[in-house]
Amino acid sequence: MIFFGHRFLQSESFYHICCIEAIENTPPSCLLYAEFSESSLDVIEHMRCNQLRFALHIHNITELLYASALGASYIIVEKNLAKTAQNIAQEYLMDAKILAFIFEEKDIEELALLGIDGVVFPNAIVKINS
Image 1 (spheres, one colour):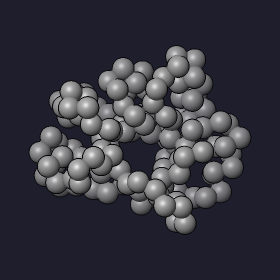
Image 2 (cartoon, rainbow, N blue to C red):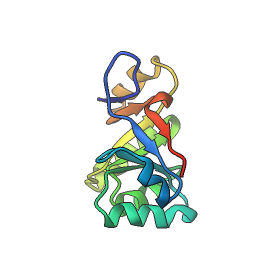
Image 3 (spheres, rainbow, N blue to C red):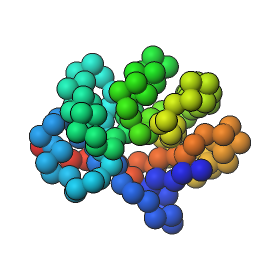
Image 4 (cartoon, rainbow, N blue to C red):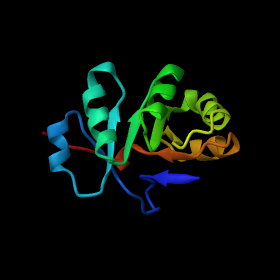
């Protein structure tokens, strides 16, 4: 299991961007993060075209399929969608890793038993302003 933001496991941070200009305020070769929405497609396309590593936070199965097709390295889902997303990712042999967004350590065991690729705690996400 992959851990992002766990209190005693060192990990890479996600840099939450909301526009292309915000990318300029991130460290080189960092892991970018965006919320999937139709209004963020220009940012997502920019990341994809420039071969930047990025994660997309999605809210349903259709967005999961779009995130994979758009080249996300990580797809972040809410805990209640994690098992379904993981099953679909395995069925379609997606390259992206499925990460469940969680707040409490007690959720780790449940998600591990479900075979989820990893977890993200809120402190793993750094908000970047443009």
